[in-house]
Structure formats: structure tokens, C-alpha cells
Image (cartoon, rainbow, N blue to C red):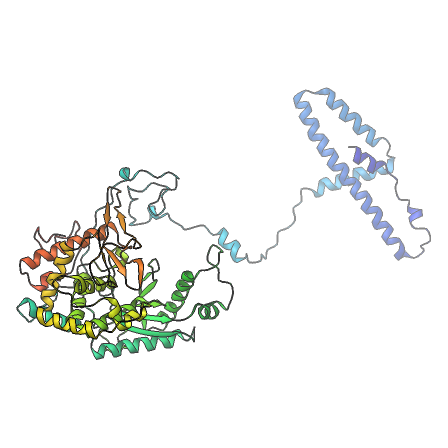
Length: 565
């Protein structure tokens, strides 16, 4: 109110003073505009004041406060009394004009601009339906709480292992293309084994096919990293139609390239950063390069992605190569493992080649053991089992350390493998002569060697007291530098001790460190099953019957209690 009184009672511009010295009509126009603007503002202020006072007066009258009403009336009189008749007339006219114009609304524009995409998306009603309310949705699992994520409760305290709800039973669905046990033309055990081993040995055609795969992969990868070199390795004959053939391929494609070349070609020499902002280590760089190479191979159409194993000690990706890439007739694709700077395929190839140089049966036994372990489902690292390379070392160690065999010498007599291990190879003339003499005296077939292999690891091998050391080539107490792997069961009720398998190229590394408790149990069960079948003189097809996990909808794989899985 004081501000409005000061505005109204303040000095007014005088019309003659404002127009003095200006004779032209155009010079008096700004003065008239100024005076009109002044009176318009004064009228608006008074109109607002009157409306506020009227509302306040009505409120006070309704409340019965006559003292406040009297004070407001006196204040209004003091504000209006200094005005002359001309000013009062203009005030009344302005107030009346304001009252008449106030109810009028500004006409709306007929043409509206199109809303922005974001505004349209925000204004559009959402059609999201919660997963639980969608047609055909499964009911929520009774074993998970409402706040659980991937089965993990969000609260900081986890329930005890014994109090956890039991996992749901495994439901096994019939395979669209089931793999049956192999069939043989031969009738006797040894003849069937020889027939199988002959089909497992790599042929010149297989080696050429792997070479073509490596060249095609190198051609595609060098489009990203020109310095890359690609090498292919085949552990056996490449073919499909065998159990777990895609999960455990026989072909390895290894890309060799330095970390500096990978960083400069893939990331332009920029500082490598992981998702959390920290500097990328060599393993993370290896994974990033493996993803880039996989994208390049799959985008060409010659390869298909199957699965990845980035959590393994040596990250790799499993691909399917089209039959046309390896020179096939287009009927079968070839599964392969793609890795970067991996030494395991090279070590495996060197050991297999030199085993064949000492005794052909040694390589045949390795291939037979690997085929048996694969068909029985205990050769898949991602499921907590031993790798094919581990089964190779177990077979070689058996041929070195078994009392009745000793067909192979220690690692320092393997010329190429000893150099890969950083050791000076010894003259293998004496070792070759000794192994040849032993071979002539024993004259055991590959089938008989497999029987002895099962008996050795089924009962003669001390899991807690010794390690399978191809480097030493003899039975000895457990090396204190080699860590023992103990795996806990998921329910926390017990633990299992894994067999210790020493890496011949790194004596401090236990290759069985990735086994799970279930994998260790399956390892013993499969050895016991094979021992029982061999004691019954069961045919080879029954021994190699593909393993199928038992569930509510599937019977036992063999139908007898002795062979139950």
C-alpha cells in the first residue's frame, strides 16, 4: 500500500515542460506516449490494490473483525485524498477499462506446431505390461524372494546354506538330433577299439581342412590387425555326429599377436580403460580383441557363434565353420575353438606328435581316452570337468608311471616339448630303445592299455598323495609347490579333493584347479562305471554310450542299477 501511495503521489510530468522547445508535431508524440504509459501503470496498480482490499475486506467481514476493516478504509482514504479531480477521473476510467478488459480471453491460434519426438513419446500412453501379467508368463519362482536379482537377495545378510530352498529338479527334454552310441563292424573288444582309433586319427584331408580354416580366419582377422598370425591345430579327425562334439571341438585356431599391436590397431593407441575406468590389463585386452575378432568372423557369414568361455584361464570362443570354408561338401559344419596367444594347443600338439614317435599305441590310447571322456560328459571345462588337455596328460602319465607299462620316458626326453618347457632335451636314443624293447615285451593292444588305464586311476592312483607329473614321468610324493584343489559342494555339506595334474610347462600350476565338486564326483563315478563294464566284458558301444543327465522325464541311460548315472 505504501508503494502504491508513493507512486500515485509522486511528481507528475508536466505537459508544457515536457514539450518545451519542440514545435513540430512529431516531437510531441513521444511525450504523449509517456504520459499515457504513466497513467496506465497507475490505473493497473490501483485496480490490483482495490481487488486485494476488497477480498481482504470480505474475509474480515466474514470473520467479524471491524477494527481491521476500519484501518483499511482509513488507509484507502489517505491514499486517494491527495488526488485532484482530474486524477480521480482518470483513475476511475482506467479501473473501469481494466475491469471490462479483464474477462476477455486472447483468441487461441488455430495452427499448432508439431510436438517434438520426445514430447510425443512422453505424452504417448505406455503399453508396457509387467512380465508376470503377460499372456503365458510363468508364475514367480517360489525359491526367490521379491527383491532377488539372479537368485541373489539384495539384503546384505544371506541365509545359511542349510536354510536355502532346494533347487528345482532337472527336467531333461529330448534332443532334436540325438547322438547315439557308435556302431562297429568288428565283434571282439580289441578289434572294435582298433576300428574306433582308426577313425579318430587325423587324416591328411583333415589337416588340409584345418589349414584352410586357419587361412580364411587369418584373411578376415588381418583386415583388423595386419600383424596377426593364425595357426590351426587338429587333435583328431574333424567330424560331427559325436556326443558333445560342439562343446569340446577337436580343432583349435590360435591367433598370435603382440599386445602393443592389438592395442594400436583396435583402440588407436589410446589408453585402454575397462568399464570401471581402470587401466585395462593384458587379460582384459585379450578378451576385447577376442570379441572384435569374433564379430569380424561371424559377420563374414563363414562362421557362426556358438558360445564363449571368457571365465576360463585361457579365454576362448567356440565357432562353427561352414563346410564350404574347409572344402567340405556342405553337409557338416566344423566346430572350433578360437583363442588369442594360447599355448595349450601347441603343447598338446607337440606331446601327441612325440608320443606317436615313441610308440603309435600311445597316441591311440590318448585319442581313445579323450573320446571316452567326451562321450561320457566329463570333458567339458565349463561344467566343472577336466579339459581334453588334462586327459591327454593323464594318459601320458599312465604310460610313463604304471609298473606294467612304462612305455614313455620323462619330459626331458621329448625333444620339442622339453624346449617348450625351457629345458635342455636329453638324448632320446636310449629312451627310444628302452621304450621299443618294452613295447616288444608287453605287446599289449590299445584295448588292453585302456583297461589298465581305468584300473590305474580307478584304484591305484593316490589322489591325496601324488600328482600326475609328465615332467617327472614316475610316481613320486606330491610336490609342495603344486597347490591341491579342494572343491566345496553347493550345499556346503562337504568337500571333494580333485586329482592333482601338474602342468609340464609350469610345475606350480595345477590344471585340475577348475574342477567342481560335482565334476570330481562324476570323475570317480565314470571310472567306476567303466571298470564295472570292462569286468563284464561289455561291448565298446555300451562303454561309449553318450551320457544324458537324469531327470524326471528321462530314464537311466543304461536301464540297470549298476550303470545308473
